[in-house]
Length: 409
Length: 70
Image (cartoon, rainbow over all chains, first blue to last red; front, side, top):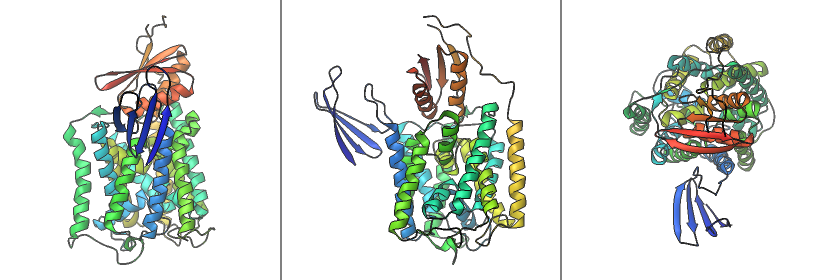
């Protein structure tokens, strides 16, 4: 929470007090006693609020909560990991039978519900879909296969780096190169084409499914699997993990925090907006890991990681390239899905299936390194992503302009 | 005043900004962009301001019409 006093001179506005209780914003005009409340993305005429501040705060909150979750029981350097948690949830539902990674993770549920509720309240809830859904489903599968070769989504990559795991540097390099390849396609005219408006009820299904997962977690029926050992058996208390997810879901929806968007926008537009959130996650998670004593610098014997540089690199090339084509990192797909983007919901479903395939077919890497099945799957994934890239790139496409009128002033 | 118009409705991130970028290269004097969500609206606004354009936004039903001028 912060309170600031503005001395704003133009026109009739003289003194404004700004009270910020994230993500709410209260403006009190002392000159006439008017009170104005809104969520933080509001742009009030004449008063330009710093968007960047919001994304840095959200990034910092993500880094802090990731640290808290590790302290309270989540695996080390895995306070938050979208792909790992989707993998654990897929295991909990019995979609795969890898006994060490089965648990319905409340963080994901919280993020989806938090983003859904805040989108409804702030008018960002728009149900739409129809932009190459099955292509997105396939991309979702391969983004997870790439991430599980590296053992972490882009968010966990930052958390691993912040925990001193230098293998994540190779992951980050691969991630940036994957993004660069995706940007080349975008610049050549890659597009999965437009979405269309859909009925409101369609958008309620995804949060409803997440709510069902929460019920399954709380009721613990016999058909749900819970790991007895391994990463799946390390978890923070349900209420705290759920609350952390809700807070992150709200912040990420309002600020559009995205791990892939940060590097992409730097390459494409020299825009540092999204990457500032990425950096904020790193800094707070670094301080956090030093404070709770999990920081360990080096390549070898890092928690839930392996030291095969080439495959850490290639896994994240696949993840980065696929995520650019999808328009956002795995976390962003969950937020977009909750806002009513059905294509992102389909992508997330592809991620559950990809996670199940990864363990059913022995594709996921383990602490001892990548499996040969996994290496084949990553190569196949890179080929598939390139084919998807070429098939959806319309080289002849110029920007279609309506009117084609010369500017008359 | 009449501007060339670009429709970015339904496009996923970052296509609306990319289309805007291409549009101002083709007609640097000014251009009108139609967007249908707040993400695209805000991203286009930020990009346009970073590129030295003034942005005027009008809401038309569920869409936003952004007029970019020097």
